[in-house]
Length: 96
Image (tube, rainbow, N blue to C red; front, side, top):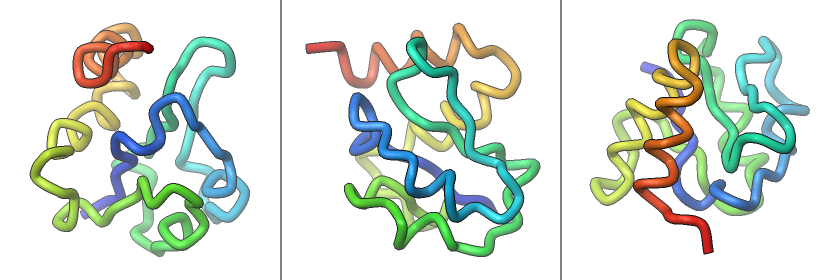
């Protein structure tokens, strides 16, 4: 299990979670990405990021709300194909 960053992070991108992550597994490209991404292979499931998020966008994988379940794949995809993950974020939540 890993943690997942869901839709509330899109276009907010508060980095409080990055600051508390003990293994630096939360990444993004400034000026390019619309949300932060947790690397499921690096995440140690410590949960430090979840309470640090001011918009309640971080969930344990099994607790991701059904309406946001697509974000489980998006986070993992970003570490394999950033452009595909960015397109998927745009599909899930079109820019205003």
